[in-house]
Structures are given as C-alpha cells and as structure tokens.
Image (cartoon, rainbow, N blue to C red; front, side, top):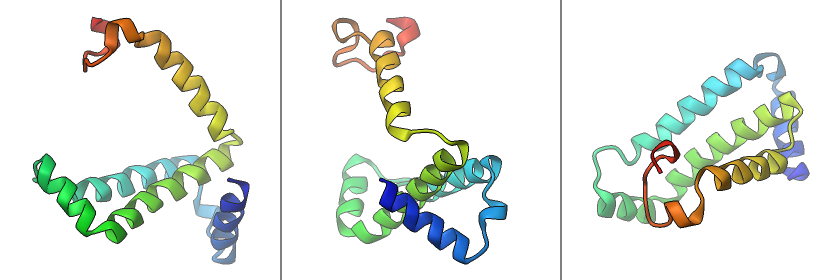
Length: 112
C-alpha cells in the first residue's frame, strides 16, 4: 500500500495540490466521487446494474479508483493506518452483529 500512496503523493505534489487536500476537502471529494459511482447504477434494477458493470468495467473501475485515491489521501493526511482502522471496525461490527443473531438478516444491530 505504501507504493500506491507514494504514487498518489507524487501525482498530487507534482501539481502542487497538497494545499487543497485538507481533511474537509478530501471527505467532500470522497462523497462526490462516490455519488458519481452511484450515478452509474441509478435507475437500474439488480440485473441491469450487474450487466452495466460487466459491460462498462473500465468506467466503473475509474470511479472506484477515484473514491479509493481520495480515501487513501485522507488516511495519509490524518496519519491513520487503514488496515488498523478496518480491523478495529470489523471487531466492533462483530460485537454489534453476532453471527447467531444476524446471519442472513439485514436488521440493524439496534433491533437484533
């Protein structure tokens, strides 16, 4: 992951964009790019969405990459370890959604 972050930093720094990449702007950018990803599937049923994704892999991949790039930059700017963040969240979710209560259900943890 460090090599990916190095490439992202280099791209950003070559353009002197670090000045714009503060936590608020990066969080906004994640939301904007996620909305662009969502727009690709808007108004499509499950089958149509899957077919669209299969037929437009490059376009979908570009939007996914945009979200990931901004997310990785935000993690970097905040000095966080993404793997540790994910591990901590999975542990917390395991407590909130025990297998015996949540398996095969979409019920929110507050209602289990």
